[in-house]
Image (tube, rainbow, N blue to C red; front, side, top):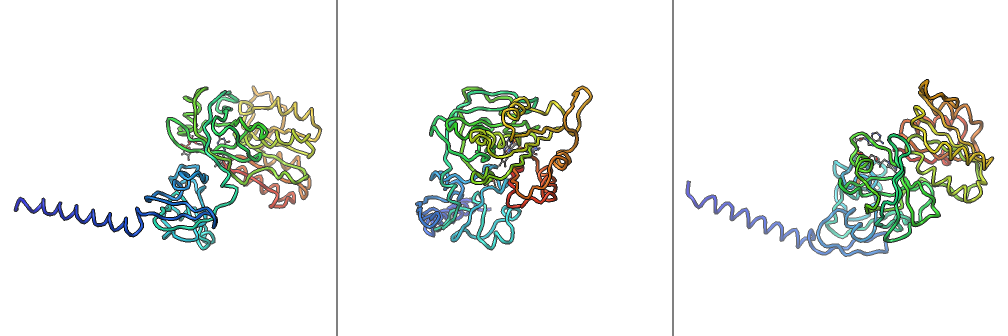
Length: 359
Ligand SMILES: Cc1cc2nc3c(=O)[nH]c(=O)nc-3n(C[C@H](O)[C@H](O)[C@H](O)COP(=O)(O)OP(=O)(O)OC[C@H]3O[C@@H](n4cnc5c(N)ncnc54)[C@H](O)[C@@H]3O)c2cc1C
Ligand code: FES
């Protein structure tokens, strides 16, 4: 073979690549584009990053519990114009109705041309924070309370029940955690984090995170929060680390003098899975409106447990009458929440009054 043939082929390939890149640039791929948010904010975009990253660089923080890997489905937003076709990675997260409505996963959509999007107004108040670990407390063998002081900005205003996202150092993954601290303490954030075997973020938090470490937090996020306007009775049901958002809700209610009736059910397997029991029983002594009902599904003989026994659904069933005028706040595993909703519905609760976060 002629020695010049490969050189000529490489040359042609190089010229084609340069021409394609140039065409992409001229047709808008790398050129300047305008991203319009909620019909009012106009962002000039260079390059061709994902919508999620483009917004984040411009201080608009969309929830993204998987950090852009198309596994959480949290980063949805409505694209009115300029998104292109739906990718296979988006399909599992979008209902037919959402597809027709232009809803997309912002981590999968690239800003290649002028784009118009709509996001909930409250997301515009989510910010990126630097926070320093001030305390790590073991609550059980697999649950820790991690306390942070906000450094920059110094205050986060959140509604009791909402969550924030932690960029976990070392593993550099982003995970969602419900805020477990008092909403009034705007310079402090606390999280109740359960170790997931082989879990990237939780293994790091449990094994390597230390007091003095600084991490990045974004938030607040989420539509699971206390209806502060209502005066209806409240049923709270939690399992595992699901106590986190309920803790923030209870702080809020206590600050208001616990003027609503609250029944709080906590489901655990054995006694070693219980935590904050003394504190909650003390709260119940202080406020007659508040009742705490921990229940064990598999108490061991050495537990000497004299409290409620059984699945949390059965315990809720036994302890609830007509819930027509009640609100429910549920937090725990998807299976537990679905089962609890069935019981609450049987007790006449209105679905509009049932709020939950599954994790
Ligand atoms: C809105 C929201 C609020 C949340 N709040 C809290 C909270 O307050 N406290 C808390 O501890 N967690 C909370 N989570 C869960 C948290 O975001 C992480 O998913 C969890 O900590 C696991 O992260 P990881 O990186 O350690 O595990 P990964 O590395 O993501 O997962 C490792 C493996 O474990 C599996 N896995 C992941 N999560 C669980 C789980 N919960 N149980 C069993 N298997 C699992 C995965 O499928 C995977 O196979 C919340 C999640 C959401 C969406
Ligand atoms: S960030 Fe998780 S799906 Fe987009």
